[in-house]
Image (cartoon, rainbow, N blue to C red):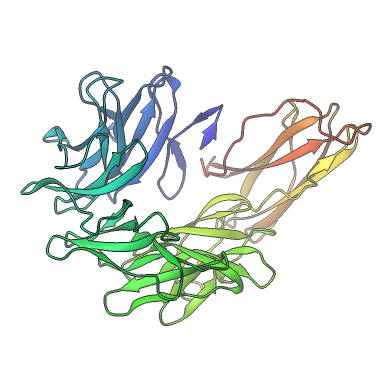
Length: 451
């Protein structure tokens, strides 16, 4: 989240959002999360020095650094092992590392034939770490590390460039490669120690790429076509590569896949708007907006980014980041809407003109949301009235700005347990003389989250 001019890492436990903190009020960038609730990433202090970290709700933030240099955390396994890159001094070349609570930081060394800098990017629970080495300060080449074999280059196809994306439970590595400078785009690959790097092709497209892979080797990504449009893609050993279609438009892309073969992403509908989708071989592609139960007014799911094996989906919407859960108690497999919808208000007004704004919300606790507050971005705040019936409701308010500028409206609804959810909306207050926004204040963006 961007808060107060800095990037803040956060952890959502299913009920509320927690800022995981930062050294010296610096920025935090989260890179990975495991099922135990451990988070890995990179924290920057106020001087810009980067330090890899592992965080847990009970243990707080623990820095991971080699010597007095920099480090970056890129991924964490289910066993709490972290990989990334580090240097002994702030200006030194980066090298891949493996860290565990028991063994500390371990330098994974240089792949024969490849230079520094190098970094570990993905890992599995069996001990495989995959990453990249950078050649000529520009192109990356895929590498892999195991305890038995050390760090080795795994691009056996002589690619101009290769990048790792995910690892499988059996020691496989999936990623993307550029075969040549005039190849026309990337091509996906799957690497195993036995077979080396195998190009997976592009089906009927001019290019293709991996965005995600399940531990069982179900790959999700995209296929590019000569007309400039792309289609969501699925690949399995048994079924090969296939296009997943769209929601009536011309473009789609797959972003996440789980162990059950469910794929999520975004697709263009007949009206040309991007919508979040869920795909399965048995049912095809479905607009997730059509699956929402009791969604707040105006909520639109635009992009589904990840899905786990229980069917929980992380998606972006016009109201902010949302978590969708399977709701077997209401219709079998339908998904639950976010608490707050978007702020419905004009994009611009003139100084002195009343801006009318409204927001809708749903709450599974039918006995009651308790309060709502409006912050108008110019220092003005006001409490509002709620209209609620059966766990669903709306609220509205109005405000007049005195000076031109760009302002952010923040609406916060608080439930009876004291937890608040906020959504925001930017408005340009336009000078009536020149028709352009003035140079007024630009408040820092806040993000949607249950706190």
